Length: 192
Image 1 (spheres, rainbow, N blue to C red):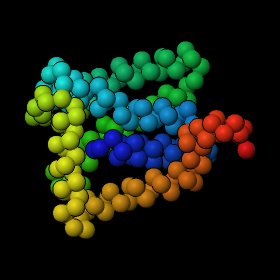
Image 2 (image 1 turned 180 degrees about the vertical axis):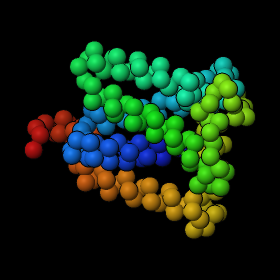
Image 3 (image 1 turned 45 degrees about the horizontal axis):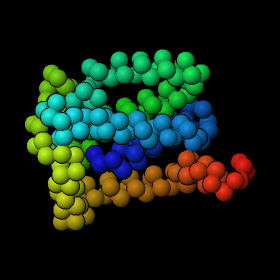
């Protein structure tokens, strides 16, 4: 998945989870934590592989289901210590949505489930060249655009459009968390 897709998928998951469990809309700081958590695996693993050559693939340490319990336990301890346990839930939903997305998203393109994406070091996907994050991201982005623009009205394109629509509508219904808070902070307006 692309960063914006991870953000969108994670936000939809988190917003629906908050609405179902607490009957509320998601709030700013928690939404910012969700955003960070949805991107964390790629922010760590892609540079480890693509730039530093430490791991063979961009689906490694932080993508691993074997590492996830330790990372989640650390975040749980930190959020308890800070007396902000709701932020653990935000982190967990964002982070786990990233892992789930990396497993199921390829099926939208007809590539089947990528279970190997979350089973490092037991299973590894073929690595990308160590050409740097920008070079590899550019290469994959051009491939993404090609697939998107030449595939016609495919299931892949329909999924992309549905995801963009769902997250935009949901974010508006939720009151534009984070953006609304930043707007109020910049304009000096309190909560209305």
